[in-house]
Amino acid sequence: MRDLRRRALESHKTVSKKTASRIASGASSKAPSAAASPAQSRAASRTRGRPISDDDEGEVSDGTVFSTNSIDDILNGSDDAEVAEAVWKAELSTRIEQISSLKRSTKEGRTESLTAYANIISARYAKDEIASHIGELLPSMIKSVRQETTDYEAIAALKAIAATVITIDSDLIYDDVADQLKRSIQSSESTEIKANAIHTLGISAFFGGADEGEMLDLMTLFVEIIESDGASVEAHDAGNVVTAALEEWGLLATRVEDLQEESEPAMEAFVEQLESADAGVQVAAGENIALLYEKSYTHIESDEEVSDADVDSDDPEADKEKSKFVKRYQVYRREDQLLHTLETLSDVSNRRISKKDRKTLHSSFADIHRSVEKPTRGPGYSTAIDQETGRVYGGGRMKLRLDREFAIIIDKWWKLHTLNALKRTLRGGVLQHCTENEAVESLLPVSAVSMRDRRG
Image (cartoon, rainbow, N blue to C red; front, side, top):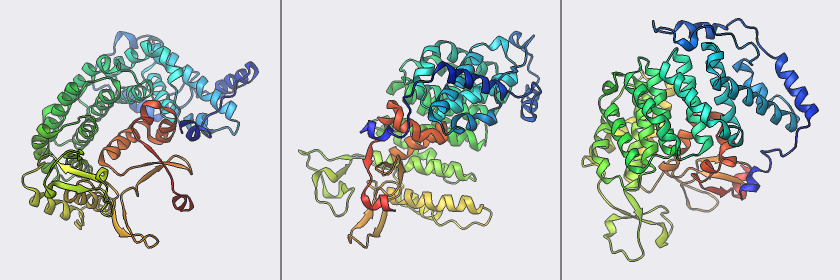
């Protein structure tokens, strides 16, 4: 199965020395001038009065590096798969060397190298290329986060750490990065850094070896941020920080088998955030609510005797025991009030809300409302009738296509939370990692696409 999905996504050709030399030569010819770009100039000015460290003194410009704007050209600019693969690997090798050699770089150069590195390993699965350098890469990235010389550099380092954690798939990384990430969340003066540190901490716990107890501790930290509107980390009313805490709480919750004890305090915080003026906060809170309802139901055991009122089916047409779920606990005591709020959000018409946000709220909360009413119905569930079969469409209409034959079906909230976390980190590289990265591939089951879906 895995070989079928990756057949069109990888080249096994060997690059000759002549070709490699030609690529290296072409790379050098694309180097930008030593003058800083406007973005770099802005980055250099944002030191917030912080004293320059010893490492910053006597720096020289990285005169042979690519502009970050050329990354797309590096990854996709050649029709020759042999050349294209060799180019991005050569560029990645250069970036690894630059990141590992902080004393020979400028603030602007470090930011550019970290950004280019993260872009490459997000778009291409590069575990073999970076694994042997992790001992130099991670300490350097953590140093950029800790020193926070500029916001741009710290954020670039945080994004690079997150992409590295997903690529490497090591149970040892979380312990190496967690303390600094927590300090950045608590003490950084930048809400953008705080938000990115929250995302990187969540990804590091999920992929980097945190046990369930550590995940629960982080979820408690995130709930404190949510219920205080960010004030617990000196980011009061910072929507990006609260949204990050909501999203990473949801990601970690997918890894916790039993959330009964966590449901009550979390639900109070999430329901309160449904009243937020920030649509991103509202949607993230709603998706966590739907996840909690989904996880309150589990498959019925063959020898269980339960009340019919507690049994639900994920297929209204099915009469198979394997399709039946049983309610294990009550998620929220004021469910009628919650359903009213969710229904209102699914039909919000406030003109003060942008058209884009209204559309997002309508589509998201229609699904969320449906899942609170029927927790076995995940995102994208449709009660419409298929005219060809006469059956309810049901779940499975939300898909991530891998190719014409295979797709990841997003029919559960835990799948949507997982996919969204991957998209936040890998952006357009999600497809590549879903087919190449075993750590990602094992998270989201792959299904064959029906002939009708292929025609569509």
